[in-house]
Length: 322
Image (cartoon, rainbow, N blue to C red; front, side):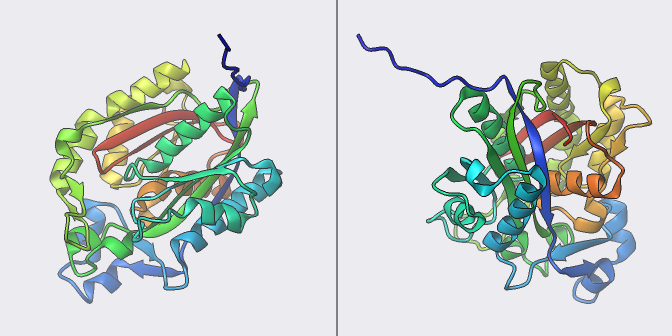
């Protein structure tokens, strides 16, 4: 009997570069107050957002993904020829076929990689990162580009204050590659499908619905365990965490999670939502990039991340920043 041969994978993977793209248009709370019953105090008190970015017609999902991915490749020091896996996480594709992964790879100059789209709602980037990390460790890929990109304004009723004040657009990316010293911890992922209607685009409707209070209760009561699992699987404790960058869904949720985890006072907490809004699958890499660019986070810092959203899905990891 012939034995199937398996490739020898890397001991671990690490982040080699980060990249981000934020749309040009800034939309303030005061601007929204001109077209709906809301105001700056109401929005900031409930979700912590001061402004968000909305993409223009010429800032497509592919354009934004390519911009973020290109920056991540440049930061990694690799050439496009070195990449053999491209994963694009998004929950706002308006055309189901074809997916945008192969097109993004082509525009980045990556030749014939494994490439696909992944939809796990706002948890999409962390799901994609887990897949890419495992692919490198299994020997199925050597270097991967993982991109989270959203145009949530395409699937949001911009006259509905319950969603329009929250959702936004943008793209964030990472390049990851093999490492003798693992820089990406095992993924702690899961789902609560009994609440699949909490965030949805119902059949026959063009825009998203969200049971905001139900999602808030779920995030603040159920997801601390996922974060603790991610740390336990990586062999670290809350005292080791330098940076906490969960999905930027609501500033109150971010701060509640940080408090429940008992993170040290020195831990840098991502608050990118204040300027960027909720960018779904793009929010974790956007937040990390912002912290690195501002100097609040630095190379070698240990970061705890968590994506969560529609499905309901969640995925967390411990990462060493590049």
